[in-house]
Image (cartoon, rainbow, N blue to C red; front, side, top):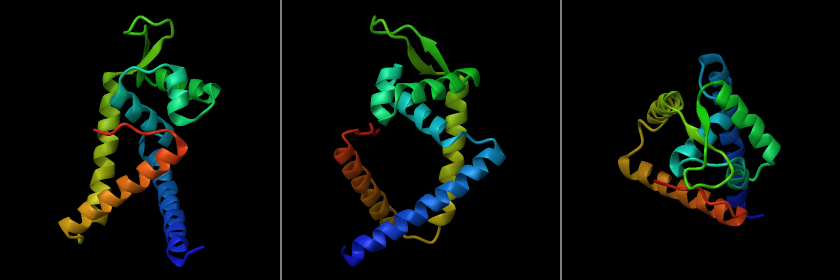
Length: 150
């Protein structure tokens, strides 16, 4: 394994460690769980989605997605609706409360990133954002599950 690849492995391991710390903060501070944040983000980007569509998008078993969406329905963050395109499967649509919570959490995360990047130049931040997008799209290509982008 190349030295630089080992360095990337190490840094991505640390990044996931920091994500775990953020999850603890979510539990303590009322933030959305990671799965809720991701699911709400996806439904916001694509519009109403069925269990099958969500299962395919995330590469998860339908029973896992069913448990996650049931929790979101109970919390009032998504609602089940008839398929707007006339299909048989019901779909999940983000509620106004889901929109509010997602916006609130996203703003909190962006504020945290602003603190971390405060002493970076605008060019460095732009380069880092570009490399992260390139890295993620490479992972998505290999996994066959592209994520919609604005």
